[in-house]
Picture 1 (spheres, protein in one colour):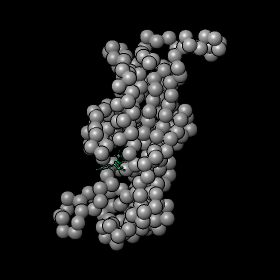
Picture 2 (cartoon, rainbow, N blue to C red):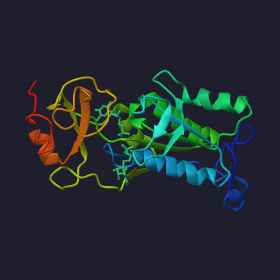
Picture 3 (tube, rainbow, N blue to C red):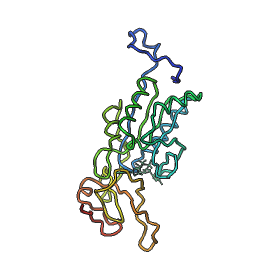
Picture 4 (cartoon, protein in one colour):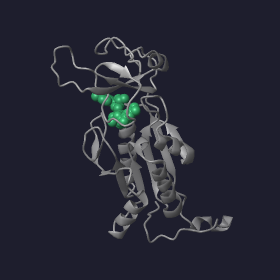
Length: 243
Ligand SMILES: Nc1ncnc2c1ncn2[C@@H]1O[C@H](COP(=O)(O)OP(=O)(O)O)[C@@H](O)[C@H]1O
Ligand SMILES: Cc1cn([C@H]2C[C@H](O)[C@@H](COP(=O)(O)O)O2)c(=O)[nH]c1=O
């Protein structure tokens, strides 16, 4: 086990082959991605559990969790308190402040990583390369327009390892679903703000009152995403709202 902290010496040149064991194993930036509901937050909490059980100290970060609280919450029922970050957070300073307060930080768990600014992804890479902090980031591949989020794009560009989360989410037709449709008032939309925090909960049964969330997401296969078809369980006609 390698314990990392501000006091560690960071090698400034590549060691000769015989010297390698004097240097810590390199840290890594790992990015796990997929559509909504594929188990990213569950995996984030599992990675944290497995790392912390090795005696390592992690810092959990998130932004805009569905719970509305600074937490990483999984639909399986697990959840952990986390630090809420936003576009203005310097992630290097965040870690250095923890170190200055006497806390060890060996690794970061970053959920909802699609919401990071590209510059914040570069800060994570710097923490990996210059401070030997392992970073495990978890985020959506694409937004409701089927375009990469800027944070996701940067993670795909610079991460040491990129893994598509293996749990398949299924479209209503039974095919694997990889695209996130935004549904407003029962109708799929393709225009709007990139960030709208909401869940994939199915629509309530007819007559259940107005507690229904106005915005929800539905994960679809490519064909049904392109056609804007939400399937038989969709509220309302399930039609695409043309711009
Ligand atoms: N009651 C349940 N029993 C078993 N697995 C569940 C249950 N509810 C949700 N899940 C699993 O949790 C997954 C969603 O996990 P979550 O971490 O919240 O996803 P993400 O963060 O990617 O949106 C679902 O795809 C499903 O596999
Ligand atoms: C597609 C899409 C999603 N979001 C939001 C909706 C949720 O609050 C999160 C994703 O959460 P999950 O843990 O992956 O289920 O992202 C968004 O703001 N914009 C989008 O285009």
